[in-house]
Length: 320
Image (cartoon, rainbow, N blue to C red; front, side, top):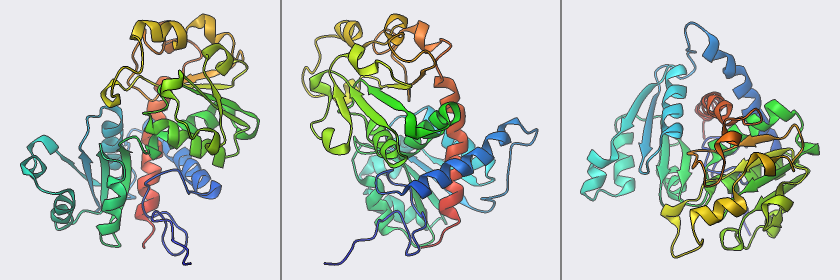
């Protein structure tokens, strides 16, 4: 039986697309984080640009709404000196029934070098990656419930920045894990980077059945789930992806799984609190925690620019 090569890698094992944290080695993940560290200081310069992607065209294709991801990708590409094209999907030919691959083919004819894609269908970035020319690169900015690899990587960068070493950490991912592409990307990255213990915490209706197979511990009460943790990653309730009544009410959810200062005290005293955004205050997290001393939610956003610069710079530097 033939071994199928990871579609994210070229024949030399180098990253040419970023589609998922799953299947990437510790060396590749660490290389991305190390490269991002070199870009963090660009934000502090008077001229916030490096010439790495000068002459390259980056097309942002967001078929789903986004604030942080789209904006930070645009900033990242601009700081790499790329030409950035933001496609307005609502006013594009996709709204007239043009297929995804026809859209990609037409944009490729306009000399696109990198496609940054967010799509409601799981696997859409993989489909695009299979059909682009060898010199064109695809970065997944979130596909359905499947993956959000750059968010996973910026989460890893944030954890490493504050905690240095993954091998002694206990990390809890709390909330709507069932619908969260961020949770899956975080879990794959954390386990690959050697995190001592990964926990998922949430009501039974919002925890996938395959978590044990992914090497994580499952908790159905917040108090037990975050006890003694070093890192707590809160997730929002993704009501737009829910079918049927999975929860009694947002008020009841906050009572059981909302992170308050009192509950946070169960974690380690130097635990950090993270959130991929957007935050629903009073639903999954209390404002005193979101804005508190242990919150690193805003630094996550800042680090996201450097991480996305690193990803685009690395994939553009590797040919298929």
